[in-house]
Image 1 (tube, rainbow, N blue to C red):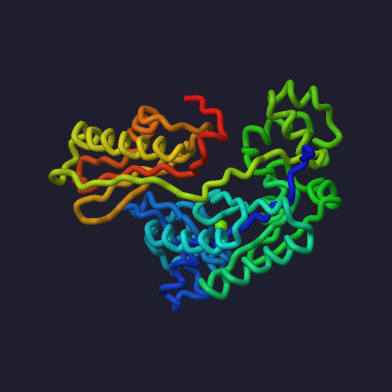
Image 2 (cartoon, rainbow, N blue to C red):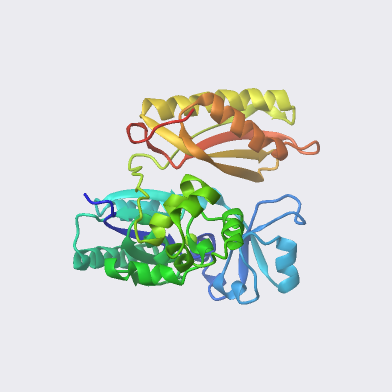
Length: 354
Ligand SMILES: [Mg+2]
């Protein structure tokens, strides 16, 4: 195969958590509402997903719930129910898998599908079929971007939201990305954006016209990756994770407690169990989630994605214990603790660092 990737179909569910809530609460359709973090302290809650009607008031994910309520005081806030969204996510992924292509569940509501072996009209047919099937069977809307390579397909998808469909043909790639901001490239954060701005590089077109050595001087190896991308070469691989989207272990504590050593001991045991399962299926994980259920059955989760893949129980336990610390409070007892690893990949396809 040449250095260019084949066509990738990138699918992103529209306002996923909010759409899931609309499925079981149809009265919410067309109303401004937000799914917010399951915070015991409403002053600290954060909007996870805003319905499209709520977005018209400037409400968006990541915004403190209090701020959202200032923008629209009648905003209906629903506590997130991650287990429910994950169940629907699995149904979405099953539909995609049923087409039989190599597929990566990039997140709970995003997937990249490798359609390298198909020609343009076949890709179009498959992508439309998936969109229609999700709409018919699950009553959910998604946006699909198609391009040569995972990065460009995601960018096509991002620019077609919501309920959109955008096919960037190979010869259109350079033109398509030219006027995109550097921050539109998945993975380019504020830091990289700031560094590039220092060189007066704001658009991908600016990268196209810059010098690769200068970029490498500024950003290291990543500079050369960005340069290649700007020239239409997208080497981001699809990491197939057919068998399992996640591996998790959870368990009630012997009795409700907020004693940190007791909770940590349980977490350590669960981390070892989960990491063993990862190794026995020849997988590596990249994302770690901890879950705490309190005595009153409210639940909190915290997630972190590592910059590398691992199968280590030590890494898992040390990261999970950092994640769980802020969830253990003086004034509330913990009933149940869980740990989950996701963004799994086959160990044979990755060099692990730890
Ligand atoms: Mg989405």
